[in-house]
Image 1: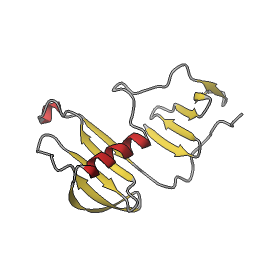
Image 2: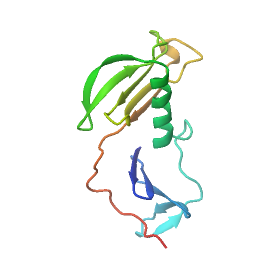
Image 3: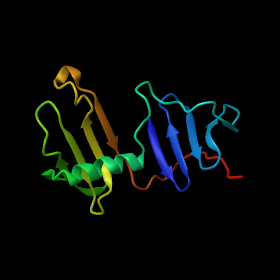
Amino acid sequence: MTITYFDNFTIYDFPYGLREVQVPGRGYLYLADDGTWKESDRFEWPPFGPLVDWSEAQGIADGIVQADPVVIGYEILADTPTVHLRWEEATDDVWADVWLDATGANIRTVIDMGLSEPGQENQMLLVWDVQSLAPLDIGPLPTNP
């Protein structure tokens, strides 16, 4: 799934072609086959439950920064220079990494969500990955009333 944040819209594009848009004051709308926007009975969360949104991803990064992380290195992600940090309590089985830009914005996070059950066989990763900070073509959007 790709999430695009644009002005007052949050856009969810699913790999099988469904587009849902969260519009403040209007809830979730989906783009119907006839090109009209209709109210969604429910937002199509993936099987593992709600996805992390921008504010939650930033909160995760802030928590890692406050935990006195280890600097792993520097990388260019989404055409942006980033610092790669690792949660200092990390082990071979349990870990969390975050990549931040110069403003502290979370550009990438990879967290082992199997914290209560260490071991590779119990690993479930949460990956937050910014693809671009300036998308050019966001596709169709509903009009505000």
